[in-house]
Length: 178
Image 1 (cartoon, rainbow, N blue to C red):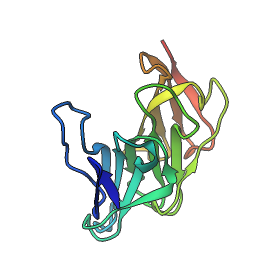
Image 2 (cartoon, helix red, strand yellow; image 1 turned 180 degrees about the vertical axis):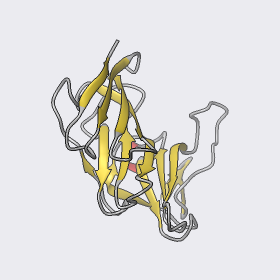
Image 3 (cartoon, rainbow, N blue to C red; image 1 turned 60 degrees about the vertical axis):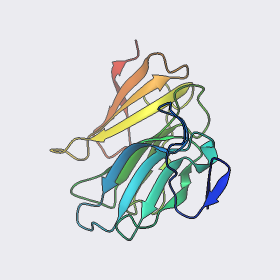
Image 4 (tube, rainbow, N blue to C red; image 1 turned 90 degrees about the horizontal axis):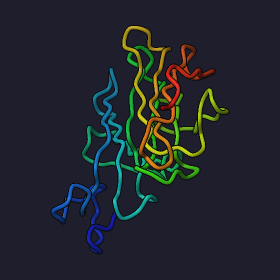
């Protein structure tokens, strides 16, 4: 059950209730559909009234019902992508517009998006502190190569543009923050 405008509703996503772009309902950062099973859908979402209800949602029935994944929650979902040749591998970016928390960062699933683990690293190779919005993309021609753009904690500038060429085992700064 989610709360929209103080009212409990059964489905996962609320409709906007205000006139501002972030008023009321959820905002969606990204949608990923399993490459071979269209019933599996992942959504990176932000609940404007609660980071607890923000993160990655998963559906196994083509989007009729969604559940928030506890292993990828607590921060707004910005992006989610399946590896096109190995759909067991999924990456997600979580982070808000500013004020980084421990939940902000890059997440990886090795079980098709059933569960996620936050990737850890050290500056400058993979910043995990003083960060905000995080976007992740997989190279379609070389799916072991993943790029991520990470903004600084104030959300005012790029903190780092990083990449991995080994499915997230190691990361390097591709373009340092400006």
